Image (cartoon, rainbow, N blue to C red; front, side):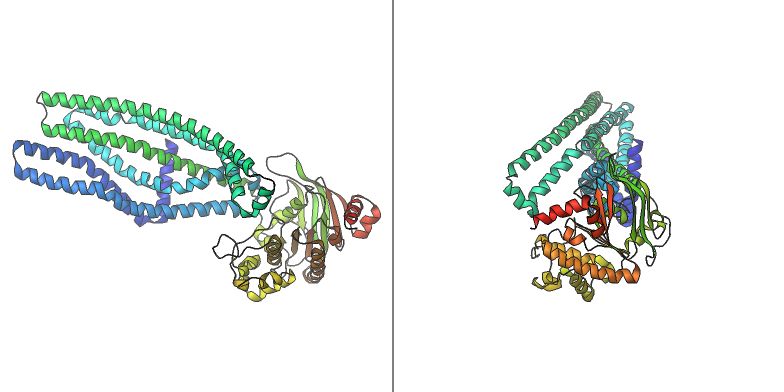
Length: 594
């Protein structure tokens, strides 16, 4: 109960922060509507006695009051709905923005690798839409408390034993709390199969994967797996909801027995002449209201308890993200490299696994050099790139930038000096200008800068084929959006990577996998020329990850990675002469083109 009270206070704080005027309006209207109900019962009893006693004037006056209270009871809640529903929409917007910030506003991305984080996101996304229920419960609670007090006072005036009727509401409240705890645990327990089922649905509904799914006749298999996962989720939730319903029914049964006892007591006293007809009408009305109050209290506390669980999960999510981030000391990245980047015995293991993705990596990437990283799939190439970009922090060892540990630099300032094109690039469904321009936000709308980046990426032909050029809306999410081929999307991503004019580190991680080998080779010849020019002016390092040896042979330094370790380093001639893994892989690939 303490946690629910704390969550209720937090919810009120959220409402006040969003809009205190609407908060006050909703609270006043809901309270007035709720308090009017027991007062209506009291005046209805007085009106009945006046009618029975033949006091027409008094009966008419009481009738007017009854009518006014009836209007208040029936209408004020609807007026309050407008205020708290607007509050709920604003609160949901802030909640979703917090989710986005927690997901993507942190320095690192390690939390995305954690299953507990994924489960939290699965539960929190649909729960964000429950703010209307939570705010209705919040503002109804104020009026409900006062209504219960008024009801208790009116019942006590008739017979002190009738005070037991409101007390009989305690078992249903306790039962409702236990029932919500049961369903809350079930939501957590079924988060994983729910998450996987949703992923299968997104996979089957995405046009990008439609061809492969049809070629391999995966439709039935996806449906089967999706059905099994939803069946697992449904069984878990059904069992929990059945148990919760049984617990709630037990609590309501206790109140039902008390309700019947109150009716018998009042009717017997009316028959004996100790109470009039108006008192009987009053008790019947109040008992009916107590019944509604109990049902409302159970539902309201259930909604508040559920929202409390949502806020608690959000706190847990903050803790997960906070554990993934280590505050950086406030030093400034160098304006230019004089020595370059050095990795000193660097190791890294992904969260939740003891198997190292990288181990004992010691390297020197000289200032102004073009460096190529090669290796088989899963060797650790992309992990190395993400460590250099500050997306992960080494679990051991150091990454030094001109002698300064990367941990000592503000991550955001370091990333301002990086330009990157990743193999898992984003298909930003924006106007073509912005799809490229986001690579350097201050120049988002600078057409000259965007066209220059496209020229560097050898991607001007993509824009030339669009109906409205840079103004063309991209993506099928838009009714008139233009869809591009994989290679066209990748060219725009390359242009985005080249928007920044003077990065200290240019990372190209399999950025041309959708292009043919010849196009990639010509493109990287241009990159090599640009890299030498950039390296001469700022000491910038260009880091290339590729499977194509015809491309990487032009690099100043080639790094060969295998099973998370660096096994060879040198230029092309040195590595061929060494006749090691690089030479073996180079010859194997060369044979494929003969």
